[in-house]
Amino acid sequence: MKISVEKDFSSTPGGRLKSMGPDSGEEFRERLLKELKKHVDEKIEILLDGEEGYGSSFLEEAFGGLVRSKVFTTPDIAERIVILSPNRTNHTYVDEARRYLADAIKTKFGVSGT
Image 1 (spheres, one colour):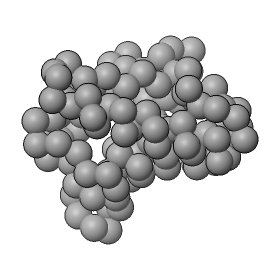
Image 2: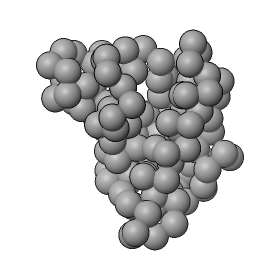
Image 3: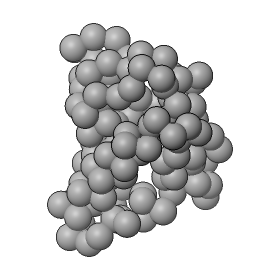
Image 4: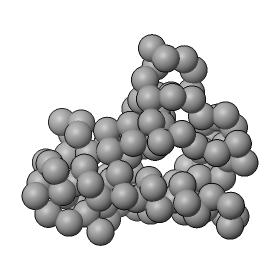
């Protein structure tokens, strides 16, 4: 399963919460969570492909917030989510998203999320 942020969600991701405006990290997280529930035994590749870039608040809410949700009771969420970039310009965002995911796993479960 693949999700392209730009093609499947928004070419201009917004802020952290839905209350802050459209295309928020919270909204993306909710959409991602639905896909994770539908594709229980699959990895989900998330392509950070938007040329406009990603705010830290969007990435933290989307990936860190995913771990903080009450859905996951084990740290294996990191094994199911593969964050990629099809172009060189977004590798910083990929690293940042992976770090938020790993940090939230460490905080919630006390183990490394890498």
